[in-house]
Length: 341
Ligand code: ACO
Image (cartoon, rainbow, N blue to C red):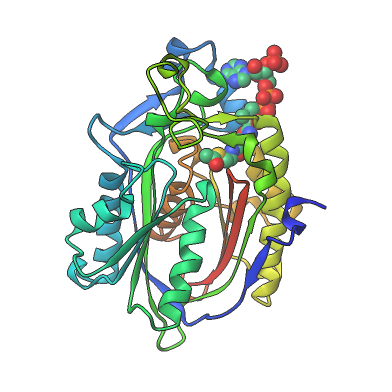
């Protein structure tokens, strides 16, 4: 049984009375190129480009935290949606690089935005986190519990990368993306389906081993650099292709569509080879796939959100288009959604 066949794999069709009213993204100014990484570790632009498709990534400034990136992305999404921060009712931040273990990064974002009447909390589902947040928010808004929701994927992964480990440090970057969800009153633009899954049996493949209650950072272990990403890349790669393929097929089928109906695929941006393998298996034309992994690397929970915003602002999405979003990450977790724009 593959991970995506496991009983934890949940599909959901209803409610489809929620739409995305605005998107936004924010990338830190500092660009770290492959050439600069060649100075830090034994690697090459050629290796990184051919194995991952990544050319450069963004790195947050000192003192620039996940909550700051998140708030800047959310401000742009709210502006596009025409909603004042003071009127926001729900904020969900998806992140694995919170400002602090507690309180949630969403609490800081609430303050940065001045969204003082909102309920705010985090979800932790690694690279699938933005789509987990989308699912939670669409049920909350669709059921009428909240009039609107701001969902944000935001990461400062540069703070949790071992800059001496060439296996991981070339892959990740910082950034944030956001979307505003509101009821779809006249039937225009709807979230048609989504599909989430988890396989905790594979938790060891990709984790940050130190810094939690299982392995607090102490004076004794401080020199072991345990609060950084650790990944069995080859294994993760195989699971990613399988799970993203299955999750894509399930979301398309739940929406009552076929691959031919999908105008644009917005996949998690971890590795161009994973994206190519998934797209080939679900029979989508590569020209209908949004790619920005070359510019930002893997920004975990932020990746799909940033790509969605860039696709939206570049005019790659038109009213009535059916968009497939699909992600995969630590947990293991995977998630997909089909949206009618
Ligand atoms: N530069 C040069 N050589 C390198 C580098 C580097 N930066 N990194 C690894 N290598 C070497 C390895 O040491 C290995 O050498 P060896 O054969 O002598 O042992 C060789 O390159 C091949 O290593 P592989 O791990 O087999 O390389 P692979 O082609 O699998 O690519 C990669 C590695 C890019 C990590 C790939 O496996 C991958 O993308 N995995 C999935 C990552 C992912 O999708 N993560 C998603 C979620 S992330 C999240 O949730 C936070």
